[in-house]
Image (cartoon, rainbow, N blue to C red; front, side, top):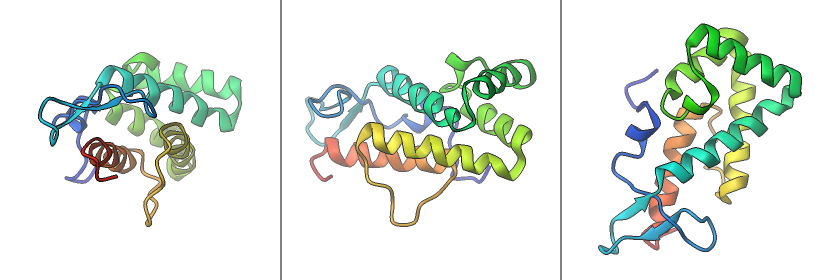
Length: 146
């Protein structure tokens, strides 16, 4: 991982707190209208849902097998993925090698679709880079600049 990678998810969201809004159900402005708030619990739910959907490109049985191997090899249970994101990504890369980027791309696409966020001009298949982008977009939206 490069020095720009920030793990786990709560560290990515450290400067933010995402809450509720009509469209994304997780954004709102705090009392200080310039400080975005992120409901990390809601964001983690959305992230897990998108990971589930992204892994389905391989099918239901392979998805279950991936979760099984991640739990046994990397000691990462499905529900712990947001807190152990680095281990999750490393586990995918250990299992699939360079092919893991196709899975990461699938997860990223699900995340953009779920949150109704346009992909960046220069798309990345890296899950962590994409999560940083998503958090920044959500922060801009919550400040009224998105």
